[in-house]
Image (cartoon, rainbow, N blue to C red; front, side, top):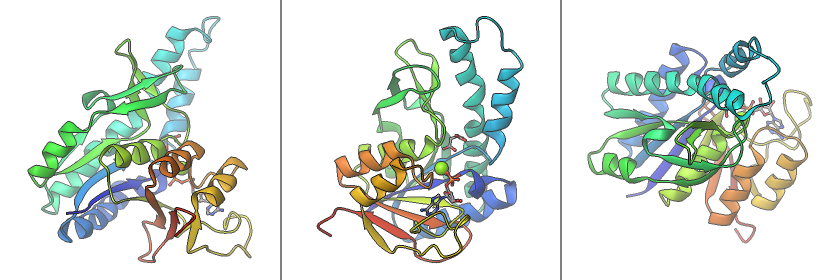
Length: 250
Ligand code: ADP
Ligand code: ASP
Ligand code: MG
């Protein structure tokens, strides 16, 4: 049985209606007989709003470790909401699902608050869910420090959560659902002559990500390359095949 990790970015879960549509995509893959784990971002705009709340508390201590630790507690909360809502949406359409926050697996991180690195994901609870035919919905962007504090892993970091999880589960593919139907030669929202790429190598994607294209987080591409994990970038709003990111030899 193959294992898929499906990641939904902020625009794909920006409302309860969109979460319900995304849940239908998950159901289709589940009904095809795959083991499914889902990773969600916060609703589009939510993380920025949460950061604005935190910034209202700027003080002389705003650079302190403690300030940044509480920043992570607040700013990670958007993903808690969408993981629960996605799980509700799945259960409503007959797909047994359960949500998990980073600390519950746990997702172990090191490095500074606000920009921690995932070191390890303990996938046991998700594997248990597979045995029980349940879909796991994991909150992206967050983890747990060695001091048992909540961490976040940098803006756009849910891509890393998804790719790290897929690698830990030895998944067959990680699908990144977003608001464009694939990777283009340049940003299609800026350049109307941008062309969709059907298949590209990790190296080509890395070059794009490191020169500022935010369609995939650089660290997630590096990690996929290291683990030879196939990625697909596709839209949650259309049924089109996306862009596959694979080993150069393929
Ligand atoms: P998500 O919230 O789903 O993670 P992002 O906003 O992080 O989505 O990434 C998707 C956006 O990346 C697209 O809306 C697009 O404007 C932008 N983008 C930049 N460069 C490219 C590219 N080369 N191909 C496709 N999208 C690109
Ligand atoms: N919600 C976080 C952000 O806006 C993480 C993500 O969407 O990947 O940066
Ligand atoms: Mg993104």
